[in-house]
Each structure stands twice: as structure tokens, then as C-alpha cells.
Length: 114
Length: 112
Image (tube, rainbow over the protein chains, first blue to last red):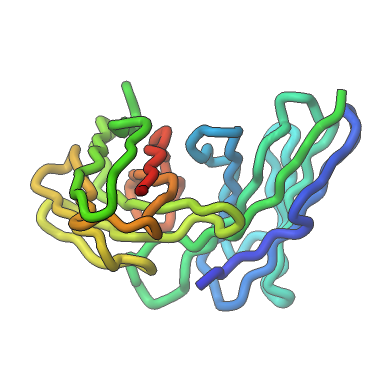
């Protein structure tokens, strides 16, 4: 079953604008990760935020985590055409040491218009 | 380092045929996993392994087998292909199931 759900499903913005996408999840987590997937390619890890962190930055990326609302957001500032891709959030399950990996959402498809 | 490699890139099977999707990594990762990606469904975990000789089922294991005889390789076997197994398959590896996953380029499988 899907743990994380991204919103919106699709987003189209002009180059240079900021892009924000959101992820909601259902159960307690140890960490939440964001991945990017360019068309026809594998997923690439962007950032990991732990459950005891509220905000994390990496270059033009800013991720926030609100465990009380079970939600996270990914902000891409000063977007570029190369940011056109699908973005997925992924959560582990705080299952007391369970080793069954990550659960991915359905993704947000981001299009940057030149 | 090649990272995570998958072969083949594309495959067409007829219903009932069997095949093995290959996955290899050269990062000495203990954890490896297989996902399938279907339109509008995100990625779903098929099988995973926490080390050589240890495998377990994920969310959608039916119709698939795995084995892990070495740290480097984690092949996925389709026993009797069905049209419902038409999908893109991704292999991933990492130091642990909860950390950054390194994905292969994927295998696009069509079952007719």
C-alpha cells in the first residue's frame, strides 16, 4: 500500500520560478527521502530528512518535515529546465527494526517551461 | 565504479515464458531490492535482501523469485510471465534499507 502521497500530481512553472511539492504519509517514520526521476531513467536520491529534523537544505533544494501533520514539502528554488522530472517521496516504516525498505508515493511530475 | 547495473534494458516475453532480470552492484552494499513501476502507481517493492543468502518478500512478490548467492548480484526470476507483469523493473542497493538507495537504469518488460 502507498505510504507517501505527493501533491500535486503535476506542476508546470516558468524557468526561474520556485516549485513546491508536498508529500503526506500515514504511519510513523524514521526518515523521509526525496528522489528525482528523469524520463526513462532510474531514480536519483536528492535528500534524506530524519524524523527529529524539521528542515534540511541541499543546494537549491529545501525540505521540511512536520511529523505532527505527517507531511513533508520539497522546494526547488530558481528552477531550471533541467529540473523537469518526476519527484517522489519515500518513507521507511518505523517497524522496530524491520528491513523491508522504502515505500514510495506516486510522484509529482514537474515541467519547467523555458 | 559502475554503480548498479541491470540487464537487459528491454525485453518482450510471451505469456508463460520465464526469464531472469539481472542486477549487479559494485559498491559492496549489503541491502538490495527489486521494485516495479507502473503508470500512476509509483514504485512497489517486490523482493529484498539484507545480505548474501538472505531474501524476503516485499509488497508484491507473487510470480517472482529471487536469490542472493553473492553480495554483488541479485537476480529476479519471472517463473511464468503474465501480461500483468508488464512494467518497468528497478533494482536498487544501499548500505541499509532506510538509507539512500542507489537505483539501476531499469528494465522495461512487456508481456504479450
